[in-house]
Length: 277
Image 1 (cartoon, rainbow, N blue to C red):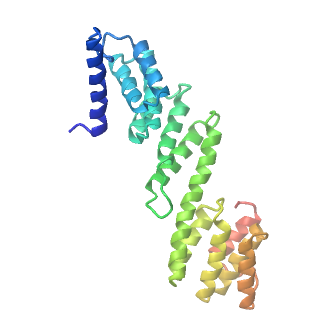
Image 2 (tube, rainbow, N blue to C red):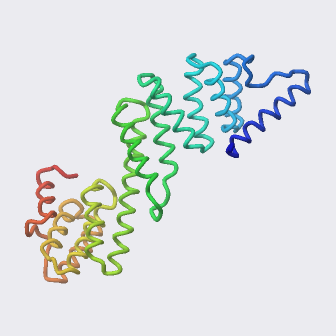
Image 3 (tube, rainbow, N blue to C red):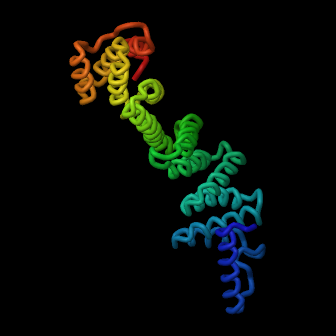
């Protein structure tokens, strides 16, 4: 069964063909008789007029009609771009991945990888929904940074990588707060610990440490609560979250201090050695 948007593409081409026939020109606009340069230029003009979806189809036709040519090479990357502009993310990724497989060392390969990352990044949903696209975006951005560290797109990929991490940390925090509010302290601790250990460079880390103080105090685990407060004070002493934790600990006649031998104590020692943050 032909998908609706694919069918609409063919409907568009049929309409154009009909108009051409009425004007005395019975050539199909993407027929073999048209040179690739003409199809390519028509597709570029179509993008400028806002017809990205139709332009993507025409670029794909260049690749189909003139395989292994330089026009086909250019058409693949332009197809990825046009599909991305049309919010046809799966098609964009397919073309971009094909370009990387065919031309891994080409100057446009970093851009193809960046388009793959962007196609996932633009589909990131809010923190209340499934984060599958967020994880895919994170992986694609990491691959972009690792494979092409010196490309013009790497700096922006790094910024989006940080924002994506922050998004995932926000999801953990949302779930952790949910458990904390309902008195499921162990489940809450697992979520806040994930933020501290896996997303420590994000904006959510100070709150996660404070919530650990709250959770551990609620369970009567004062050693862990004091140590979480000490880490919070060491790294974010000027934050409101440290003030909240200090007040909460003080209310229990406690103070931020490294106590015991748990995971937070080990983490604190890593902080002192400069292996964290």
